[in-house]
Image (cartoon, rainbow, N blue to C red; front, side, top):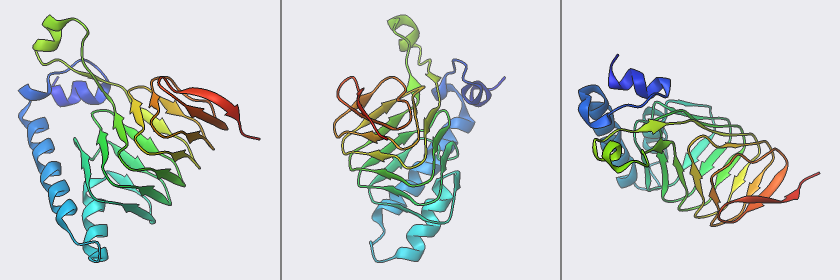
Length: 185
């Protein structure tokens, strides 16, 4: 089994030993650099390019520059998606955003994990777990969402939060670690 196949299946893999994964990363990072260098006024070219970067997307989306990802093909966004400046999505596993998701500036979504044992970590082994963001979610500025997290529908995640565990639907959650502070009716 290739390292890419292991990555996709959520098994431990070595991303730096796989030429296909290396080429995938290089290709999408080159596209991100092109995207980030476009003028804001070049709306048509920006739309075309972000649709090449993101694996699956609906009609209405807007992603501010700068934007970076690892592979792109593991990202799925629903209708009416907005990501503010400096969004980073490390999509070694699937990162799925529902409809009507709004992301503040300087946010990161990180599916990759590294072993706690330094001997394994030094070998370059990784593991990735998917991230799922529901519908009607607002993520404040400078939020980090870690691997394996699910954020339910109709949630608000407060600025500066570090989301290490799943957040149930209809919640306002904040902090480091991020915790539910209020239910939304």
